[in-house]
Length: 424
Ligand code: NIG
Ligand code: FE
Image (cartoon, rainbow, N blue to C red; front, side, top):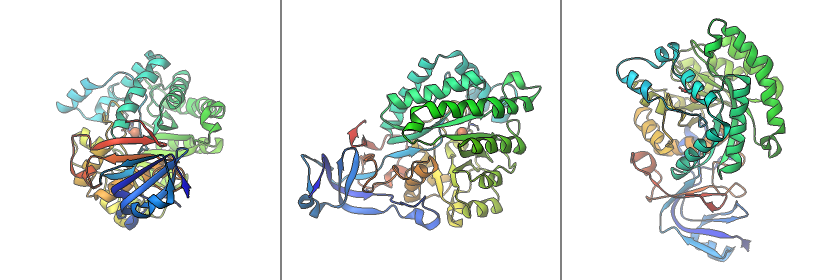
């Protein structure tokens, strides 16, 4: 007999998204590991049974049997690329873009990331935490049970540390699993405009060691959560050489690696990420055929962020279909931030990816669950419905998971469980 605290039965279609040894790549992404008429049982926050409903009544001893009435269940969604700690908004820039200014032009004129940095510098740690927690709940309502959060709006040693401490406070206060990323190399701050190399030196010589020291004293290192270093490799942000220096130093300290590459221009960041053994390489909008082939042959997850293209009013999207056909492991994420994608909704991202990147609903689901979990360093514990994993479970309003990508603009989520506890 399997002892459980709670069993969900009469799940019409269960998408397990199981992939125990790494992300799904290429053709595997079309398979969401569906079980019809399923039961999932939970004990101590973990999954203890996944299988058909009929035998489960005899196999499981549970005080609570929740009838799912034929609804679809999917793993808790994982948002593997967010800038969720921020202050202020960029609604003015939104209107400037409508009138024809580009994201990079606004950034070069002192707006963009730097305008959010002014707001973050002016905010207290408590204010950052409070606002971020509200966004976390909004994302939980949309099916998210785990997320990565980056710094990168402090851009001074003190303010980057304030962001890291805010991320830790958020992790303590939200039921969601949080993975921290240090992104001190997000923009050249206004103070260093005349000498950008000096800012890279500050990141390498002072911020990275301080961030690592913070991590070693934080709850994240104690509970085994990884710590990533990311860099924005882009014109007017960080050159290939600067990005390499930052990531190399980070890797030596013990960070896992991510890179924002090819959002607007190809600067060689994809090759750099692969060389560095990056866990994920993110954006990839200008990736070439040979980049796609190199990604397919690498261990890095290709994280696509089509909400950015949509938000910037671009008709161009990263070549998601070709990446999957070439054998890449693709994940999808919101990139939620006040500038390039002010949206908390992974279901909306799936809807965009399906239409503009020709990524099928099953592929979208794997991209927002198991592959995103691997991209966030959480693949062994999250992102799929398998015995032994966290009981992060999402019940849908509809009977089929493909409605997540098919319908859009509403909230397709009926209820959300984090480690067996209802959070939305
Ligand atoms: O992923 N590209 C760099 N960073 C973010 C944008 C952040 C911002 O605009 O505030 C991104 O798009
Ligand atoms: Fe980003």
